Length: 289
Image 1 (tube, helix red, strand yellow):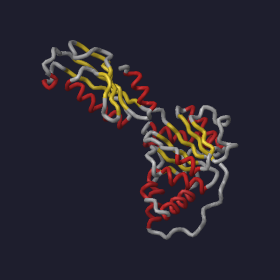
Image 2 (cartoon, one colour):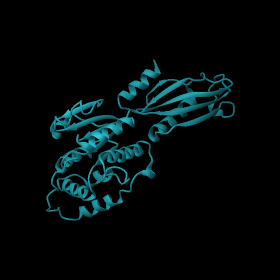
Image 3 (cartoon, helix red, strand yellow):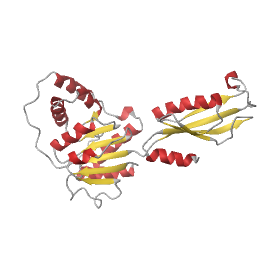
């Protein structure tokens, strides 16, 4: 079994894992320096670093590396710790480096207007694969979005039927109208996507949230929605807005919690809306993005 082929296969399937490598050794060890073992997110393994208690501890640590998406190094002294005495002729020391294996992040962009186009460019430069969907063929086409994994030109309800975001996926909603944003958001909050963002003001977010809860969606589903989307850098132009959104995507991808905005206003409005009657005001008129 080629462990490198298994790593590529894992990434293409959209799954996570960790690779453990013996990076330093001294004396007799149950394997060899540079030996590798792949631990998949389902707990299965490929390759070996020698078996026994060492491998069991590495497997457990790898599960934490997968969850935290941060590398770590383990040191083992086979001379001093009796639990490593398995009858093998080993008495050395070794260091094992465990690094996360992550799929290429996939960004779903709903809308193909000016902001969406600049978002596509910035996200691609930051290492995201992109799927773009819009109901206008004049906007949603491969000429406008070269390099996209898929460009979908369908009614949003039809497009959503064929999409299944994984836990490593990101969703940004930037259609040309509030009602389409709401249709996509209704679907998005019921997926396992890692990130969901919707463009627009706080007022719009609250209005859309209230309408969807009135339609029967649980209010807790909206706790992970980022709206207004992107970091607050005073962005005005489509290019600047795209930078702010991608910066937020990177912060989520890299677990940089201190960079992310507080969503307390949204949580407070959610709790308030749960006890208020549904608003009689219609949704704002559509606006081009």
